[in-house]
Amino acid sequence: MSLPQKGLRSIKVKDVEYQWTIRKKPTYNQGAFNGRMSLVVQLAYENKRTVLVVNLGVSRPDNWIEPHQTMITPSIVRNVIIAAINDGWNPNGAGGIFKYTYQIIKHSLG
Image (cartoon, rainbow, N blue to C red):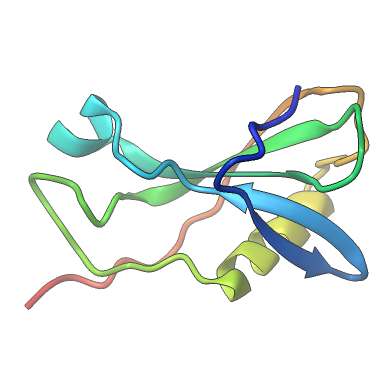
């Protein structure tokens, strides 16, 4: 499995290049309810790779009910990748999905 190339961002972690993205618009569940924001990561240059799907443990900033100002920075993405690898994610795996939860801190408005 791999991600569509459009909209992917690159990041280098320990001399390995990865691509990552967050969905531009919320799903209905993420917008109207309290669906969690997710981040997806994959190796940049491999044919068969395992996609890391990360539940960030917070609603999206554009959530219609409880908006906040939490931003996902490259530093957070780097920490997520390192933590997922330490917890068993093999980016060179034979394709498929590795689901992972990484709780980030939410910054409330006002």
